[in-house]
Length: 329
Picture 1 (tube, helix red, strand yellow):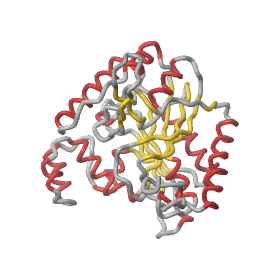
Picture 2 (cartoon, rainbow, N blue to C red; picture 1 turned 30 degrees about the horizontal axis):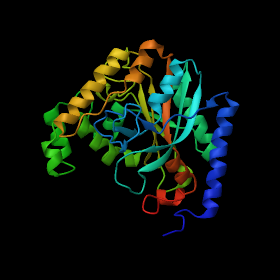
Picture 3 (cartoon, rainbow, N blue to C red; picture 1 turned 120 degrees about the horizontal axis):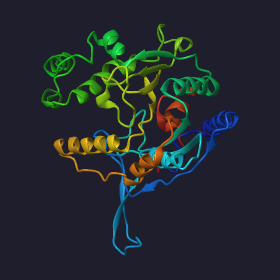
């Protein structure tokens, strides 16, 4: 088990791949930053769990918990509020989830932010990045609402909980789904199990020549996370995700700037965690202070580098795209 999980030739190709990403941003005058992996706070999201560790040498003389970051988002927004301008980062991120074909608990993330961009402009730039780095076709665009209509024949923005549970029961008799009362959890299950595998696959039958990346945009406002709610339709938010060959590659926002609304969402997340029998997470007061000071009008996106490289190299498992997976770490 001492050997790397990826071949040396693949790791050399990965090095060139990372260099190409840096070349892309250098050509656009977006500069590279580094932010901490350890933080005093973490995300409150119901569906994300961070690793935590104990720090015994705090200046207070007391032991304290620190968290490995699930993404560099909060710290990068603090840089934006300090007038950094357009920035990107290639960094390690950590999520306390089971390892699988498309996930290693420690993974590499690309994240970047563009002042004076909205979600549409950032989707276009991400589309350009994929064409530059993996020679992908120009992406297709599909609203979240239309995705459910096309693939499951119902409107996620108007369907009531009772009807939604009936739809879920057509696809699974798992007890936890039958007992679930959060519509967003049920929608997320349907999306990940029934829609996501179909996205970014083109119209041909298993032909790589026909694969086309697909942006899904205008997620429900209740799934906005850190995105602005759309002014023309308050049911949806300026959030998008990118799919290619049935794999989720990116999650992006036209970023929320209102610190009070962000605090409200963090508190609501923690309430959902309590209802689910999970512990509350500490809210990042530094991020809220940065928002209060003034986050520039901007859009940001996080991209899974390991997954993207995996698809570029036609690999079958994420372990083949990284030097040492968690079982060999």
